[in-house]
Amino acid sequence: MDFLHTLLVFFHILGAAALVGGWLAAFKTPTVGTWQFIGAWVQLVTGLGLTVLAEMGEDPVNHAKIGVKLVLLIAVLVAAIIGRKKMKKGEDVPKGIAHTVGGFALINVALAVFWS
Image 1: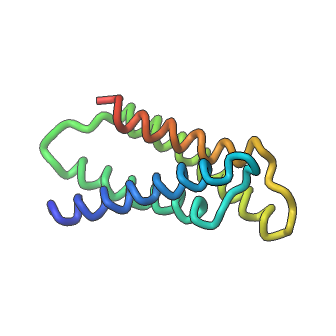
Image 2: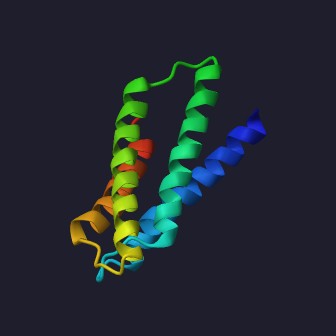
């Protein structure tokens, strides 16, 4: 189980890096890149996996924290999906959508670090 937990954490961090890094790289001309879209899905899948592992463990799980982080991630995922659909159609991605993806991902990282 330790290896699985470590592997999930590794990919969870990579997903966050793709989201926030893609947002910062395109900050002047906001858009939703392919890696941000993939990062949002990676965050969801690995986050759910980490939650399942935590529930199977002996330590108590902070359900409030998980719930808040899940709601933020759903907002990130919806914004990423909308942004990718607009990109595929050749349309400009609204700045609000692009900044929602990166900004909410950054807030999610902060919650993970600072909320015990």
